[in-house]
Image (cartoon, rainbow, N blue to C red; front, side, top):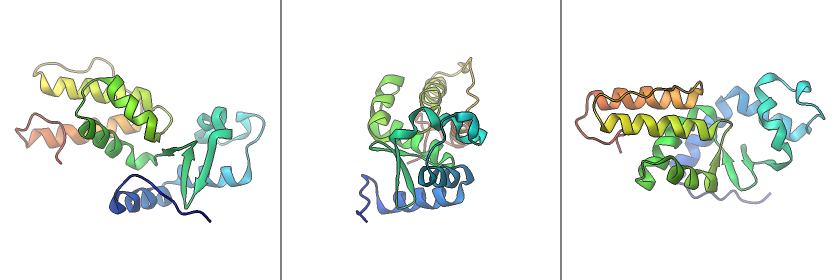
Length: 162
């Protein structure tokens, strides 16, 4: 078996692998990749149907799923990855963060999650502004709640603690 190589710290890889093994949807996705995909998405459990349109691009290695060369992030880690990509790039626009994300990571709804995340970041830097549209994505919701709690006790204008 080939060795898994990711551009991430050993700690981050360990957290991703733990999140992957603890996430029921992710383990279902791994099993589905191994078993093969049905012709129709209606033959899949509802939580895996979003993956059907690009199922031929999915593969697995050492318990992680990849869409071509991009890591499919387990849902429990999406908010953390949003934070890391934003802080790493020091960008506040959707396009800058999305460019970086499109090179490295994926999850269904990633574009909408980044859009909501960036609106929330901009709102945090301009007192009185509140996002007008909320995402139904659990990743964006968790991220904005997490960042709100961090900002509440921190006078730093950045939305995340490093």
